[in-house]
Image (tube, rainbow, N blue to C red):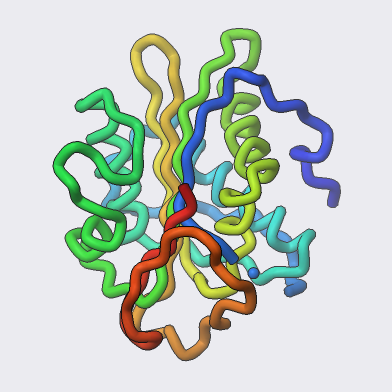
Length: 211
């Protein structure tokens, strides 16, 4: 199967920011997220979250990585951060309240060993909604830091939220993680991180940020 991201151009108005760095061959699949979820998505936002999850796993599969499992607690964290960014009109991983990614995940009940995050704002009135969601994914693929997060080997789960403002701007959040209970199965970093890294013991939870 040929992934559609290879055939689509990214609009230059794409805005984004990311957290992190780092990365086997499995069958590509489209997850079914229409089962019961604790995340208060509306039907459209659930479809968009499903699409970004699928694009992520399709890209990982084509690059020889394992697909990421959907995690409800990561999705709750992504949803909460998306809602706060829109409500406060701030766009960053750390908003004015100073709460960082790791703390946000912990507050959502996710006991993490490794965590990462991609965020994006996008609007192009010339595109359909689904094309705009695909453009967000393409922008992440073409950004080195975001792409590292998409292909990371030290995470095994993901939660996604997409919200749309009344004026049509899409806000997307991807939270990646490996829980403490599965940390032994995660592949540790094989590449050197040259940006800001939390100075914590190797076996303690850590968040790696790419500015």
